Length: 245
Image (tube, rainbow, N blue to C red; front, side):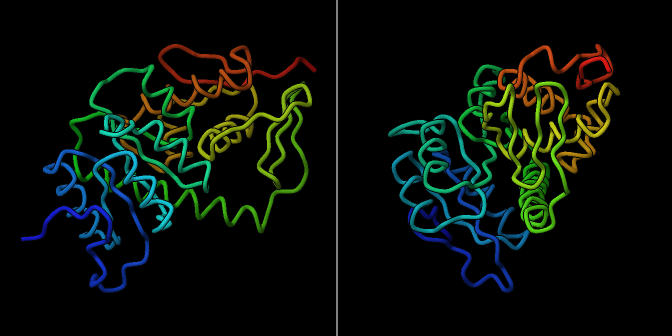
């Protein structure tokens, strides 16, 4: 019977597997369930069960994506995310046992792209992994075939070609997901986009159960570009506010 792997991948024999996913989780039952599902989806999978091992594995193995639990021995998943993102940008799906919005916002703030609260279905986790990897592919394509020009909405400036955002001429660091979310809102300034629309456009995710993900990313985005720039339409969704002409 296959045991949990901590420093090497266990899917080298998977035919045609290309994408590497590092699963960081200290619960053996959960890590085996996630690994089995992702291997069945055709991914190469490596696992780590504590913070230091996760950082070492990410540096040595160069995964395409990390599934990262918040609560870990050694140091927590937030510190893992900080250290790994400092080495190289990698999409991160963060797992949390607590349905705590503060934890989610902190996770997004250190570079996580999405989060899921335990318990979750393996089907949804696999779908989220595919979505995050598709977003990376779209971003890479946009980098070589960028949209022309810079969009200016008052003191907010969005540079599509460089995927940079400035507020009052100051650079604002956004995660890839936050940038895509802002671009989606900016594509129709002042128009209200529903949470479901944003979820479908930015995450390619059609299940309404993910709308809290949208809310948390909106909150993180507001903290960076200014809360007054994104209007909440209660019961509907969000709109990007722009200066009156």
